[in-house]
Each structure stands twice: as structure tokens, then as C-alpha cells.
Amino acid sequence: MTTEERLENLERELARAKRRNRRLLAAVGLVAGVFAVAWIVPGTDTAHAVAGAGIANRAEAQGSGVPPVIRAGQFELVDGNGKVRAVLEVTKDRPRLALYDETGKSRVILNASKHGPGLALFDENGRIRALLNVSKDGPRLGLFGADEKGIWQAP
Image 1 (cartoon, one colour):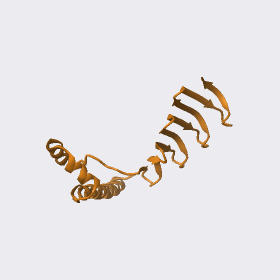
Image 2 (cartoon, rainbow, N blue to C red):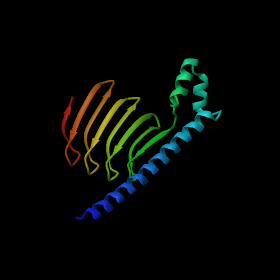
Image 3 (cartoon, rainbow, N blue to C red):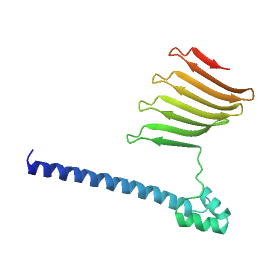
Image 4 (cartoon, rainbow, N blue to C red):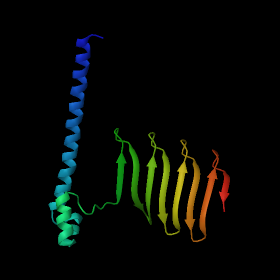
């Protein structure tokens, strides 16, 4: 590879990096703008939370630029391709955190119901392979084979 070819490659890489940085800066600016509007607009949950805070807390929150409370029924985390990789939500009567692999299959579910907390782990085919829960009767751990039949359990 000649020096000119290497320079051209470097210039292309630099141009790509500048475009990525501009997009990232625009996204950060958009998010900051949304938070600023939620902070300022009366009647929003954030405005009420700030109005109800003590003077020191309000000054601290305003000085940091971070809202003291963000409320939502569900949060989705997406990867660089826009695929949902994690969901934090409240379903019927329980909070739930679900983690998904790159193919969109559920791999981990953590929840807390009125019967107690639970953690389920799934394999790449979506089959449950491990389950841990705690109820009023105590903890229970189960391991499952690829056919989802129990291979070990305690107690």
C-alpha cells in the first residue's frame, strides 16, 4: 500500500469518525433538550418533584442538570441496531427486568411478585435452564435439561 493510499484511507476513517461524533452530539443534545423541557414545563412529574424538594436538594438537582425523578411504566434499552436488549417494566402486579440476546430471545428474567422474587435463566433456544425463587416457604433452586425436565432441585 502506497503512502497516498494510506492517507486516503485515513481521511475516509476521519470523515466517518466525524460523522459519528456529529450524530452522537445531536442525540445527546436531543436527550438534554427533552430533559430540559420536562424540567421547565409545569405540570410534569419532574416539575412537581423539584417543586416538592427542599431548597438545598432543588439547588443541587438544578446545578447538576439531572432530574431528581424519572417516571415511566416501561423502559427499553436498545443496542446500536435498534434491537431491544433489555426491558424494565411493571406487569400486572410485579416489577420485571428481562434481558434479551442479539437474536431477541429472552435469556434472563428477574421479577418480584407478591409470592416472592424470582430469577429465570434461559438457553439460546429460549428454554428455561435455571430457576431461583424465594417464597414464604423458603428458597428453591432448580436446574433443567435441554428438554426442560428437572435435572436437579433444592429443596
